[in-house]
Amino acid sequence: METKVSIWIEQLESKGQLTFSIDQLRQEFSGKSDKALQQDLFRLVAKKKIQSVHRGFYTIVPLRYSNIGGLAPVLFINPLMEYLNRKYYISLLSAASFHGAAHQAPQMFYVMHSGPSLRKSNRPILPIQYLSRKNWFETGLIRKKTETGYVQVANPLLTALDLIENHKRVGGMNRVLAILEELAENCSWQEEIACHFPHTILRRLGFMLDIVHAEKLSNQIFQYIVESGRFSPKIFMRPANNGKSEVNNRWNIVENTALKLEE
Image 1 (cartoon, one colour):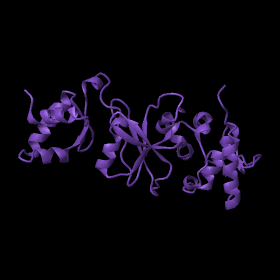
Image 2 (cartoon, helix red, strand yellow):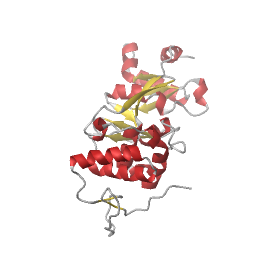
Image 3 (tube, one colour):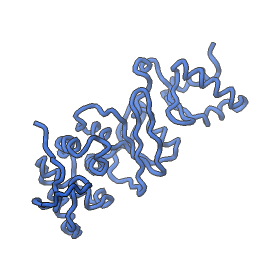
Image 4 (cartoon, one colour):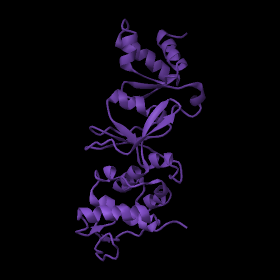
């Protein structure tokens, strides 16, 4: 027997809305106790009609998605961030895949957000890795259309810089290099993005762009750093000193990790 809550959820789905919050539910059913509403939600979760993707926030699972375990994060991340009152963008390998440069489907959904760090969400389909950016900026974002609306995605240059800054999270510098080989052709120089990153990240990006033969962009980064006078002191390619200190490149970078493109 269908409850009023389940009927209300079906009505949301018929309108194309696949998310809702406990606050919406309380407003719609103001005469029901929280305990009764929670019982309704528990039954619907058990029947796999809905999923809890964050405390107080739910996704509806249409029949066409039930065989894969629910909605992919890209279909609900925008309303979830609105519910949490966070600015956000899809980043790292997830952003690279939007730009056709991920090589393989990411095993994690990466989201950069404002405010205090959110806990990783281990979902059945794809875990969500949240990364907090303390000094938030909104340059370098692209709106991409999805089945349920729009999402914010880092553009290619911002994606490249984020990948280098968070290389440990995505499998290391060589994995970043492999992605850059495809991503670089879509990157264009934007000082308004670059100015938000330390010169160490920019120099590492320039060094790697030289390896993948993206000379135009690497030269633009080089000129930017020359004009800022920030080539000294020398830095390590991998941010850890392993004893090696020779420098044989224009970026004043110690090559303390072997970077090599796959054949």
